[in-house]
Image (cartoon, rainbow, N blue to C red):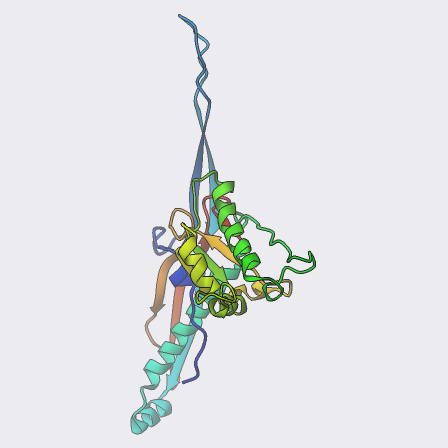
Length: 276
């Protein structure tokens, strides 16, 4: 079989099925409180008033679809050859839906209104510093110490931007940069790689993963890295209903099976809990 890169969206993003099959949109509410007490004198009647404000955020749910089929002759030939034709095509249809799901999860799609992870408006931006000469941000031009500075910088940004509420435990990198830090020693006299050093010495970081979609982030601009806390409070992938095969439909001498999934994209309820 031809091999394809691993689809990592379901591995990296907590899955939510709360909306349930048939939902046309997902709405979550953000509440904020206002007001602070003050020192008062006896019998004061002008106490500060506490208030709670609410705001709704809505995201659409879209149907992903694919189909497969087989005719009478193919069924007979497959039986003669001992090949599970029906199962192989069913697996191909499911993989096609999973590939689209994975693409939408990382990149989103403006035409369908589905929010993706990298295109989400609630992600903070971390500007990678240049190397010692001030001319390049590429890790291939930097020393291990500067690469470690960059990684700690994006992890610490979430901690500082959220005033300590959130700490990043997951870092996502493009393949080239992941390969670099996983095979480059911390120093000339060290038997520890940059990756091992970072995981051992950064108190919040628990996992570093390579992701194909981070290579130029679906555009022709630049590679990106992303740090976030892998927690459903921070990010959810909305799988409203999983892959489903509908009943076979006979069309002449052919049988066609439609396959569907309901998908709501990526939601990030807490701004600045993710940085790229």
